[in-house]
Image (cartoon, rainbow, N blue to C red; front, side, top):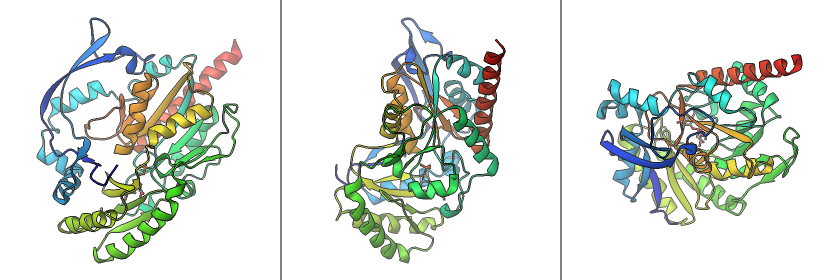
Amino acid sequence: MTNQNVVVPDAKQGIDITIAMALPKSLFSPAVPEPLPAAPGGYFTITRKRFPKMTETGGKTSSWVDSMRDSSPSRVKSTTSLSEPEDKNSWIVNHPSALNMFEQIVKGSKGKQIVMFLDYDGTLSPIVEDPDRAFMTNEMREAVKDVARYFPTAIVTGRCRNKVYSFVRLSELYYAGSHGMDIKGPSKNSCKYKKGGVLFQPASEFLPMIDEVYNVLLERTKSVPGAKVENNKFCVSVHFRCVEEKMWAILVEQVRSILNDYPKLRLTQGRKVLEIRPTIKWDKGKALEFLLESLGFANSTDVLPVYIGDDQTDEDAFKVLRNRGQGLGILVSKVPKETNASYSLQEPKEVKDFLRRLVEWKRSSLQGQCRV
Ligand SMILES: O=P(O)(O)OC[C@H]1O[C@H](O[C@H]2O[C@H](CO)[C@@H](O)[C@H](O)[C@H]2O)[C@H](O)[C@@H](O)[C@@H]1O
C-alpha cells in the first residue's frame, strides 16, 4: 500500500439512497429481535439517507482539508440535512439505543458468554482538548471493574498501551493499544477468567521507523501553533483540535511530505486527529478476533462479543462482528453516522449506564440460579 491509498471522511453527505441489502437476518445480532422489517426469505430492504462516513480517496491536500472540516460535528449539522427529525428517526430505527433494547439484548445472550470490548477515547472518557487529560471518571472505572468481574473485558484503543493503562488502572482487563497492534492478552486457550500475560505485537519491526517519524513530526510541526504530536508506540497521532482552520492545509502538507519518505506508513484520520500507522493489515477488528481466539472462542457459537466504540477505527471491529454474524456493535454518537454497528449509545455516560445494567442483570440472574 502506498501513501495514496488513504482513508478519509466522505465529503458527500445527505444524499438519498436506497440500499437493497441482501443480508442474512443473522448478520444483525442473531439472538436479538431485529427491529427492521424482514423481507421474504429473511433478507432486509432498508431505505435510508446516506450519512457521513469515512471512505478511501485520492491524496490531494485539499481533499484532506475538506474531510477535516466535514468531520467536525458542527459542520456536519450545518451543511447537511442530518438534523432533520426524519433523518434522525430513520437512523435510530436502524441503530436503536442499546439501553432501550437492553431486555432484548440480554434475552439474546442466554447461554452465551459475553465478552466485552471497549474503546477508550469518546467511549469511556469524554473527548477533551488535551489528549493527556482525557481521564475517565471513578464511576466509569467502577463500572468497568464490575463488568470485568463477570465477563472477560478488553480495552481496544488507538493510544499507546501503557498510556491507556495509566488512565484505566485496572489490572484485571486485557489491553490492545496502538489500534490493536500491541496486545496484552490471555495466553492462548486459557480458562476464560484466568489472566495470562501474552504479548502480541504484529508491527514490532516498525518501531524504529515510528520513533524516527515521531521525532521528525515533532520538529516540523512546531511552526503550526496548536498542533500536538503524540507517540502511540506503533502509530503516531497529529492532533489539530487546537489548530486554527486556516493552518490545516499547511499541517496536512507537512505530514504528507514527511510520509513521502516512508512508503510503508499510511495516513488516516480520526476525531480532529491525523494518524500515521504501518501499512500492515492489522486493525481493531483483527485485535478483536485475536482476543476471542486467545480466549478459546475462535469458532464458538456460545459467545457474544460486545464492542462499544465511537470512532472510524472502531468500524473495523463492527465489520468483523457483522461478518461473523455474531455479537453486538454499539456506536457511541449523538449524531447519525454511517456505521457497521447495529446499536447506539449517545455518550460515555450512557456507556456507563449500559455497563451497570449488564452487571445488575448478571448479578440478579446468578442469585436466581442460587435460589433454584
Ligand atoms: O481508539 P481510541 O481510544 O478512541 O483513541 C483514538 C485517539 O484518541 C485520542 O484522541 C482523541 O481524544 C482526545 C482526548 O479526548 C482528543 O483531544 C482528540 O481530538 C481525539 O482525536 C488520542 O489522543 C489519540 O492518540 C488516539 O489515537
